[in-house]
Length: 126
Image (cartoon, rainbow, N blue to C red; front, top):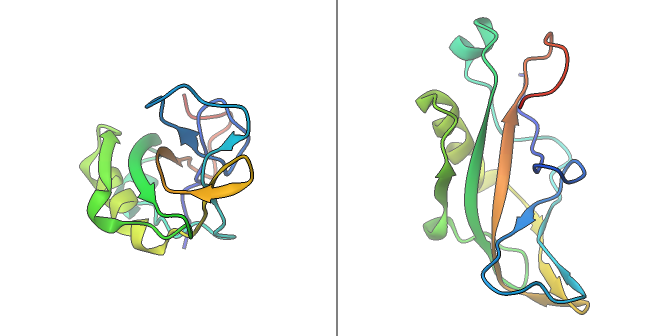
């Protein structure tokens, strides 16, 4: 099964984006996705048509990196309900290392982009 890549905008692959709820302090690190293989399935109809996109999820993890499913929200739609649904459906399989503040695990709300890139398309998804 082909899977979507989990990456953050303008950050190295596999990282997340901390929300600007407060000024980030030196030593703050957002949660880090630790899944080796993406649990997100590319919707077959969109894959067949070569449609790519990005979904942004708002997530919350506790001090142990456990995801709170009740807090999961669609922060930015891809414009394709099937893509949005695929990203949301995979959330239960996401595994994170917790956010850190000065090396100490802390609970955090953050944005997790999910990019759907067709394996035969060149370049990157905008």
